Image 1 (cartoon, rainbow, N blue to C red):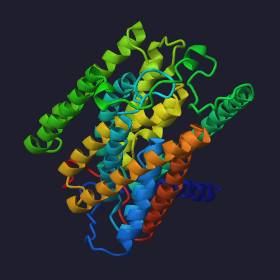
Image 2: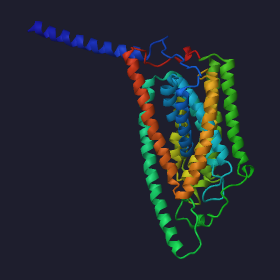
Image 3: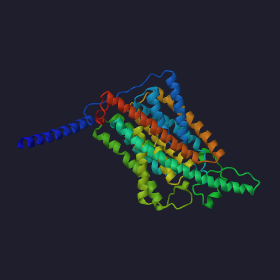
Image 4: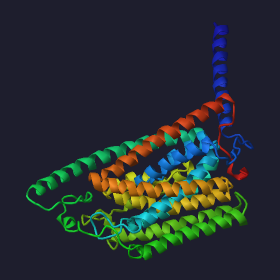
Length: 448
């Protein structure tokens, strides 16, 4: 009996040692020191079917993404990886270039437009001032994570996030569609008693608020210089310039992971928190307002403002990590705040112009993309965004459905989840088959 008991004990010890060995091997796979599987893959820029097909897909992505306020990165990255042939991380950087071009074009288009129901610009500068500095800080964190994180972890995070936000946006679109249907019926009934034709006006943020109804006859467009809030724009430019100076100092006057490297990077925190905190304090005390919500109750609690700022950081982190516009988070968030779809899209794109341009600078300093390709793709995205904005605005006015913007938002996020998730899973399977390193990279040993 003692002999068999000894055998059982030895078997348990062997099993425990085997399990421990698997855990050690898994840990070594994720955290091998001195190893990196990353290599630039930059195809030659030659006119061929890859460039033509990629341009068409990029054009459609920019057109739809700019309207939804999400940038279109979820379409750009798979196109750049599967069709043109860039490696995933270079595709992420080039995606940011396209987002910057599309966002800049869309902002220029929107600068002359007014809010659909209120006497204010279609861009809500106070909302942008609350979110954009935190978005910039999140971008810097996301770019670092882009170097460190393995592809499989990025894919898992992407699928979870995108399916959740697309579902949320879709149900918000259905809700807005129902409200618009009610308003269209009311207008149809009024037409029966009126000879005068009633032109479509977009859905107000508060349908039951009679004070909004009196403002339907506002001019849809005004000169750009009259439509800009210069104080808020100045603060946003201050954040951008401060981040730019810090990034240049980090690149040219420090070495990665040196004390000054971390000091300069951490200086972004007081810049972001200071400007967003200024706006948040004004909102909390009632001295500033998210005017695009309308004349309803606008009291903000501390935990709400903190949550909005955290969501701004998360949007930037996702944008920097995946090469996407932060609009994938900001768009649904703004809609939940009660912001009209047109204003939500315009404000999210306005914030993305600053964040995406900063990402392009950071990726350029990291030597993450070829400049000729970047210039060409920026031109494609810029033209597409302008055409998309013009066409969809006309379509909304014709159909009387501002909810189309929300459905475009949900559709773009959903397609991005499928395309990016599919590319990520395909890359993971290939790496497993080739026994490639699939762990975290060492930031301090990264060479651009």
